[in-house]
Image 1 (cartoon, rainbow, N blue to C red):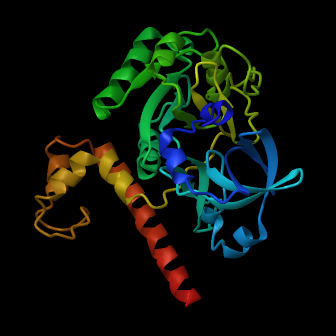
Image 2 (cartoon, rainbow, N blue to C red; image 1 turned 180 degrees about the horizontal axis):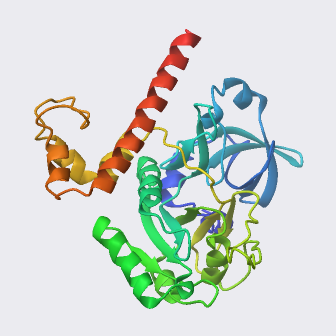
Amino acid sequence: MTSLLKRVGFSEEWERRFKNLPEDIAPGRVITEYKKRYLVRMEKGDMEAELSGRLQYKATSREDLPVVGDWVALMLEGEKALIRYVVERKSVLARKQAGRIFEKQLLAANVDVAFIVQALDKDFNLNRLERYMTVVYSGNILPAVLLNKYDLVTPKEAERCFKTVKKRFPEISIFLTSALYLKGIDTLRAFLKPGLTFCMVGSSGVGKSTLINAIAGEKLAETGSINCSTKKGVHITARRELHCLKNGELFIDMPGLKEIGIADAGKGLKKTFPLIYKLSEECYFDDCTHTNEPQCAVRYAVDEGILERRQYQNFLTLWKEFEHYTQQITEKSWKKR
């Protein structure tokens, strides 16, 4: 195992997956993704790579192609590296493709922890947080919540937001930070572990790149200025990129998301809304939709104040998106037959 590959998370687990490779095949990890090429960290250093013709031909969807964070098997041809195949992922951050296209868009792969970043001045939204949480859980990734820009609100407001999230997700790590003034950064650094891959997801301008730079103690990610009229950060990150921190942690910086559509979210919904799924076991009908059916334990819990009405309504919204996505994908697969 080489030091260069170790720096990007080449653990014994990944080494086992690359055992018995042919002599002309080498392991690498995707650091940056461009339109038709990739920057890959290999044993010999960073190299630009392209997809092999075989991989392009065999790919049935965008999910079969590499994204930032992927481990890939490469073949060297002179100064050029060709990606032969993508090694099976242990986790993936994905959303429904923006717009009316019912396809999954992969954002990053092999992420251990995803920080869901919200800015306390104007971006804090519990419904949106539950949406992100569902997506993160669905990808087999551990979520954490990062409430940034607490210097722009009163201490009382910051505490209120923190307690709101803690009450809703008591098992999740939550951090209060001010990236601009380096407040809470030491606590955040203590949470990180060398060799693990972290990413930050959230809306544009919440301070993700500034946070990564603050954690690293150096400028790794490009940041924008503050818009004087809106007091919001200017979105500047143009592509997803894997950064190596001095202490061995790995961070994927990515552009802000205007929308985060629900795709394969069955697992994520169960983990984000465990109380609703527990209550549903008491519903009279096994296939209860928790909308109009009689003797619905979920609606009863809402009426009795056991379950927040806001949380119930947000669950129904996300569930309908999940069902609609699943239906469209099923119909699409039938049409191809």
